[in-house]
Amino acid sequence: MLNRIKYWKRIFSTYILKGKNNLSFWHGEPSINKNSNFNDLDQYYMSFKYKAQYEGFYDNDGIPQLNYEGDIGVQYNPIAISQWALGHYNLWKQENSQDCYDKFIKGADWLVNNLIKNGKGIYVWQHHFNWVYKEKLVNPWYSGLAQGQGLSVLCRAFKITNDERYLNSINKVYESLQTEIKNGGVTYYDDDGNMWIEEYIMKNNPTHILNGFIWALWGVYDYWLLTKDQKIKDIFNQFCSTIENNLNRYDIGYWSLYELSDNIISMRASNFYHKLHIVQLKVLFKMTGVKSFDDTSNKWSNYGQKKLNIFKATLMKIIFKIFYY
Image (cartoon, rainbow, N blue to C red; front, side, top):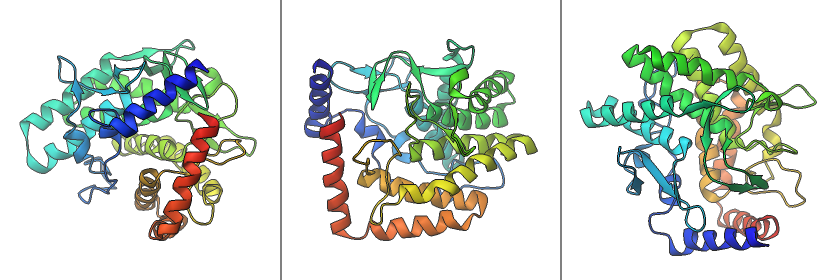
């Protein structure tokens, strides 16, 4: 009961009072970066301009921190730091800004310096605060999404600097994406042989969060672009096949699901995450040429044009939150 009270207090502070909380970083408008090159490691696939222009909290070294309000407060989040760095990378490439270059490198260096072994000897980025997602994630916890997006940063940092520190970290991070959760990694194999990257590492059943899987998968794609190693491309293709084989499970006929938990009430994506799914599937189509990614993106875009669909999805999202959080 105490944890539930703390959760709702934090939700009230975040959604009602607003201000410089974590949502001011996460919830910008998702958009494809039209300057991306899908055949060469260059600008990141989403613009992330609003991430680079984050006006919230920073530490004394200029590294962004997020305010989660309530009993969590201001914290480092490796995912946010990676997205902030990627936003500055894009701006550096577009504007030739030394300031943006310096901030990108600063983010990459933070990732190198904070990559540590977990209890199973796998290198991960830890989140040093408790978090609740279906079950309590106890400090310190790690995420497949953090691993994939950090990999995207480090691949670009190595390409433009040839600094071996980045390459050493790349190899360590990639190991986590090839290692099963039970062995300290972030990959899960289902009974059908599908390989999943899990955003949150659950003690019980995995949740298969769609946006986190796709974003993390782009890190594998970036590593392949950096190396042109066919083994890496094969792993990428296996992950893509998992999404292709299961994409229909996220479609409820008028909206997309955020994840595939075994709850009685399915977790609808918020309007923001529904739009993010649409953009991410467009990017995956450009990476792979798999037609179902483009078709589903277009279908979900049509879902989002209808006010009734938005209302139903939002209402069910609220009901889900009341029952499960």
